[in-house]
Length: 302
Image (cartoon, rainbow, N blue to C red):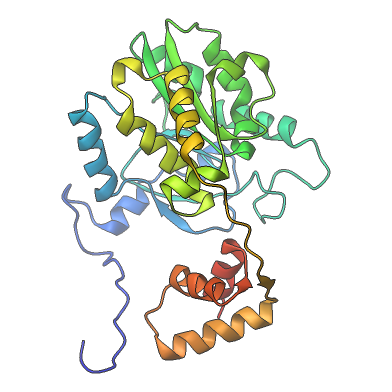
């Protein structure tokens, strides 16, 4: 980069081959087709499930005695094992999303649960890996720990499947359910629920939207594989909350869309390489408020 020239954004070369010898175009072509599930693709970004950073974290887990086997609960694909493919991101559990299956004022939990069951009944690639959490638990070694990290909206969809996991017995599967209030509706899941709270941000940092993931990482770092269960996880979180300071109440003036757009355009004129997260921090530091998702969308649509 010379002088004030802005850095060029990196874009993947579709013809470049990865370590397995396939090009990006070829890898996209072998991604599980939604047509085979009868699900209509909706609007959304493209998401890569496997990354080099995550593979490095798995090596760290193995060094601590864990045997990680990551799975994704996808709103568009159902339960999928981590795979080196590019999947489309879905948001069917949000009533204000164009992909939504939950109309406003409807029984969210029932519809989301039915959606998950329908996804589980459809195969993506023939007789492959488990399509339900219960089938995954049955296929796992006896006594295996299954850590489920889910938002309340996803919990509504997964709850019946999780109840089926619990019915196998604690000796079969050590279920740890990490989510925030109100938690599971079925009482059989309460002993496996590890509640998270916004106050944990004061100890773990980061945005509230990714708090569950950071809590999960903390638990894996601090609890041994043999002790990894809901009781030890809950006790650790309670100790962490006892040391966490109160969440400060910030009094900011909420900016409307036009105010945010004007700020973004002016900031990008000064620094064309600025990211939406950095600009949002500066915007909030100036005493103004804007939700992270709204700021991101306005940044993209600038």
